[in-house]
Image (cartoon, rainbow, N blue to C red; front, top):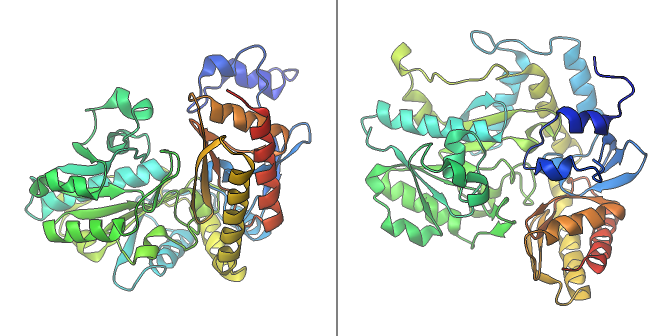
Length: 422
């Protein structure tokens, strides 16, 4: 057992390796790691009792707040039954009920099959392998390539990373995953050989890790039409945008588009437990029927985990019981006005404000790649916890956040901008 006299921060620096983190800076003598001790609603508290608004929803996962009584109760009740069991050769009630509940969120006879996995990257990885095998099974094995977009982020497993268009994250692994043609926009599809494309993959409405970059209106409709004309599949990565973030349950609803495959994770369990889902159509599913040689040999040890599925079912019930989506338009408008006021109060400090529903990115002017991180560090002193994408500060609080809490978070960000200079 670890030395009981060592504090969490000391143990962390001695043994842990954090994601997306320059560990030399993290382990430096003068750096004090932030130790999160508990959560309550839209707030997180550190081990010294300091309170922070969860301004990035705990890396874009939390939906209804921390310690929500309905989701807590669902997880506790499932613990009294079974925490985990194999999904290979067995099933369980929470998984079956969740699959039915997810399918019911989409138009009838569209996304009616659900494959459960662990996280967003594996949900995308699953979609890629389904697309490749589908065309092998249906007589078009030459469709081996994918189209993705510059600035894209779809995860870090090898296939998903191959889709990514952010050199800092993905450049070292170029050429090691699936064949990918990256384009800047729908217009770039004119230069693509359509007969070699298995699927086009996109983050609908907004690219998250690119700095909350918004797609032009009509992009999804244009992609759907291109795929239909050319026999390719459309894959939507709604890992970030799903479950109300854009103002509707799923971003694709804004343009009336249904994909052939959809990846879900993050908010699927309300931000409680790792769980992901890849949804697809009867047409794709039925191509895999007919014998062992056609089966989809892909999966994870924790696929169909009953605890995660119980949390996800409770998450969906909270949407209904608390009428979460109905409350969003007023909050989204309040956030818009607050962002406009923040921009106006800091002339020359903000290059651009980008908003899609409850998702916002504040790009700072004159940044050198470190300004966003320094602004987030300063905001922490004023009670706001969030992370940047280079010089874009993300503001994406849980959907339960009140207008007053939105104001609180934007005041903290404004105070940080007043303090931080190049």
